[in-house]
Amino acid sequence: MKRLIYLLVLLSACAMQQTHDIVNLEPKQTKDLLDTKENMGLFVLNVHTPYEGKLDKTDMIIEEWENIAKHQDHLPQDKHTPILVYCRSGRMSTSAAKQLQDLGYTNIYHLNGGMKAWDAQGLPLMDKAW
Image 1: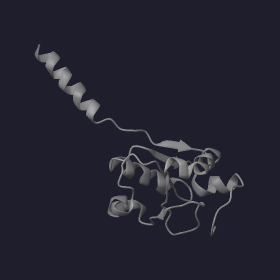
Image 2: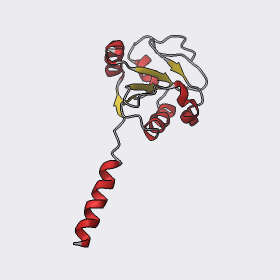
Image 3: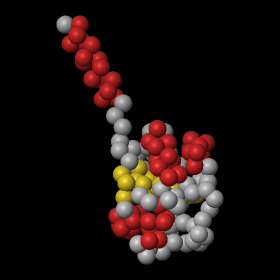
Image 4: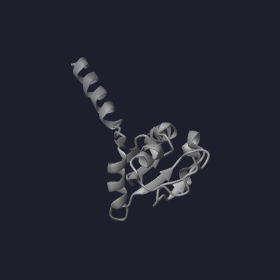
């Protein structure tokens, strides 16, 4: 009986710690997502340091990608708001996406390969600086 109670408590704790996966998107999938930005309430976040360009429809640029929590006041207050995060190559944004997840955001999209992959597909960038 004690084992059963322990198992139920353990399963309850695991269920309460449910995390949501970060969805990695290829450039074409990202473009499709951006095309529905207004309808879905998508928040678009560039975390590349230093600034070397951006995708159209970017809402915010945080160059301090190592400390996303410091900028939490400028991020959507609703933790279920869909967020697309990207950088130039995907390295900084991978870290930022994990930080967003740790902050409780549940609907995170990530541009796999960053602006370099986007550019390689012939998709338009604003202010490209590399």
